Image (cartoon, rainbow, N blue to C red; front, side):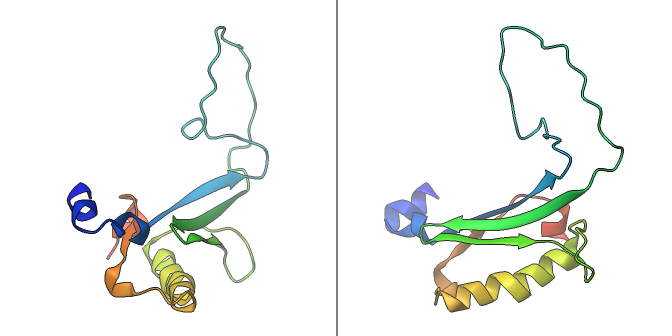
Length: 122
């Protein structure tokens, strides 16, 4: 990326950073995403249902703003797990049309995503 920025100072503005996140409806906070620092151990136990309801939401950010949110849901409106098929459908039916609306030159943008299985599925 540093090489690209050296050659094209506007390069950083052409990158779309995207990710999805789970939001639990019961108030659960994923400790992987949220760290709380303290001098003392609070020694608290918080019970949680085995399979709590959650929403899975995707969005992308870039120099021009935010695209999304996109809620991964089935036809009945229930939240679903993101897999390769659903992820590709979101790109095709939501993300690319948004880019077309914004008249983004697709030949000159970079799309950044993590190595999640749904992003790399065939």
